[in-house]
Length: 120
Image 1 (tube, helix red, strand yellow):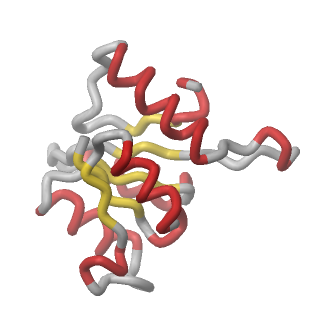
Image 2: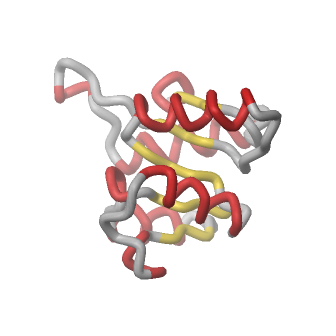
């Protein structure tokens, strides 16, 4: 899967694990986009046909809703939610497993806003 990790989830260690699992993972620092607004990150992901992976669920929910409202399209938005109890937060391993489960289920991703926590 072609992925773009926005600033909120941009971890070289996570990107490396994703790459080792066969994914094409891109970080904002790879393309000189660190610190850009969320809409700029999503626009880049759309132009590059990359699924956006983020922890910023609120802003990306709003961006997804806007794209849907104007009958637009995006490759997909995968969200990693933080839990009130940090022991329940998703690790890079959990994220990889959730993406694998999502792909294994052949669930639609394009034009979807998917909370990965439900797929671990």
